[in-house]
Length: 247
Length: 249
Ligand SMILES: Nc1ncnc2c1ncn2[C@@H]1O[C@H](COP(=O)(O)OP(=O)(O)OP(=O)(O)O)[C@@H](O)[C@H]1O
Ligand SMILES: [Mg+2]
Image (cartoon, rainbow over all chains, first blue to last red; front, side, top):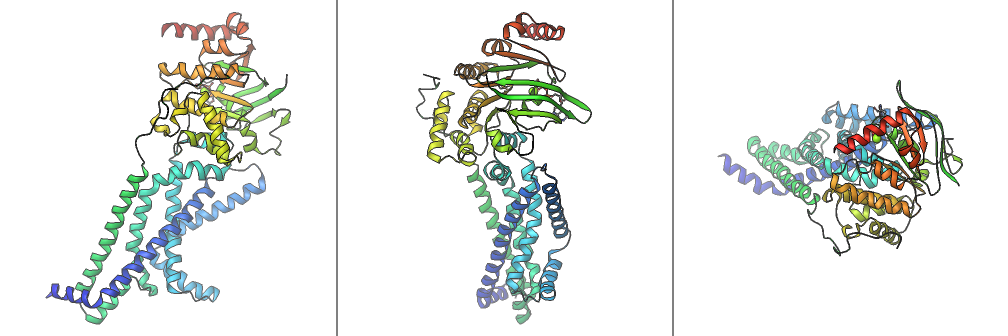
């Protein structure tokens, strides 16, 4: 009977499942964080105003072009293929034998980075033009403006999309089994390969994936609420409402 | 008198649309200059060209004798000499009132946090907003926001303050509180360049009034000259129209 099998599979393999789930979560988390950093950097780069100096302008154009190529290529190809190309390609091209976990982290990070770059760009573009102008007018340079004014607002706006990316990553790390990363899908495959109970084994994996994505979604909702901050403020010394000048 | 800002033959076009035509104009130290004129005459564009939020298509801008468009000048440092107050306030939404006035001082002027907070509190007091240091911009009324925006600009201790219709986005009952602050500032001898539709205010506080029409400075002079004895036909017409509207409201 199926249910008995499920209990038995869990009893016999729970450590492997947990390790697989842990690795899945780890890769998804690191990938999302590194990807978000890549996305933020790309967002900052791609919003640099056109410099007046010709050499600088050329340099900026080149960098922007490379950014676009990166984004288009990684959004336009499946991660499963990227994993194969990067893992076997790095061995061929650089004689580099990447550890599978390192390869996995690189693939997920770079892939997420490409999506995050677009999300960040959208986030930056959604900020009112007046915020940019006020920062310019106060004498901030591009980096100061981004770090102190624009990105904190943009990050809040893109938090839901970033969380969504994290959830996608939890699920999509399963494709990394093609380079034998022992994440949850890979682990499940080997469990099922031993006991030949495919449905029951993958049912367990299914539950684990869902628990992970559901928990992450809840946590993100909570963080979002927290970030919206308190609605009230304290007025101090409310009596002296108007200041007097030059006295 | 020292010319703080001296603009020579500045042009600005958007495509074929010539918004500023050969503007020549200067602001002296300690002077309060108002720019008036009908909508679309180029007042905001002129102000925005001065702090290079718009890059002029041609001409020169001198700040205390230095040509800042010669390519050797660091534009962000030049901008710290000019305090800008926008029609839409543009307070940094992610900072509270105090932090709005501190962030530029710390990041751009490299002042210590303690010094910056002291300076910020001083100017928040000037605009009567010192009790709201912890409030976020979203929690303030328009008039309060604009007073904080003025304090933010003052906290950088600029050489000149630029105001682009600072009361135009305000409900009528809040206009007074902002104009009062500006009048107090004018009395301290601060150099101010103000784009405004508030004719009574312009007449009262200005040392000089500039009337713009279709991208040129049509006439300039003392408030007395411009409001009581305008020479140009278009100045007379503009004033008639504006003051008539004013009467009706
Ligand atoms: N970014 C832009 N692109 C194209 N045209 C513009 C741009 N900014 C301003 N203009 C045009 O330049 C002209 C002058 O605009 P400006 O904002 O300087 O007028 P203004 O005198 O400040 O008017 P108002 O009193 O309504 O603020 C207008 O005709 C406007 O349509
Ligand atoms: Mg305007």
